[in-house]
Image (cartoon, rainbow, N blue to C red; front, top):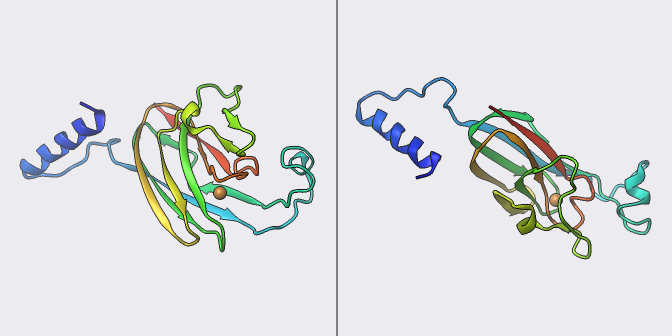
Length: 165
Ligand SMILES: [Cu+2]
């Protein structure tokens, strides 16, 4: 039985007993995630322009912004909004096995190899203005949230989340 299932049973037990009180620290944590871009604005600086993307490729400034980068271990709900005016974005959650080892990257497809990287779940391909949610039970460690549309990871559409004990 999973931890989440055990929690659900424990909580339903509370309801049947006539009181509903979450023990301190057991409440669901919510992380608000904004997927954004600034359209096809040329990058003014940085090695990304020269290196990763190739000089002939138009750069798009894009990123993931969260309202918190650290959460306690347990149930975490990501509420994800695509705030782009015209681009599809998504959010994938993958545990970082090591901060010094790059995630497996499929160069031709310009995407992270999600299966090899071991993703936990995603809010896939949101249209501009669309929102979605993903609930996971996370153990302590470092996780990466990223958009895996072609080229978006390389354009720095990722951020790290720390889950504390
Ligand atoms: Cu994206």
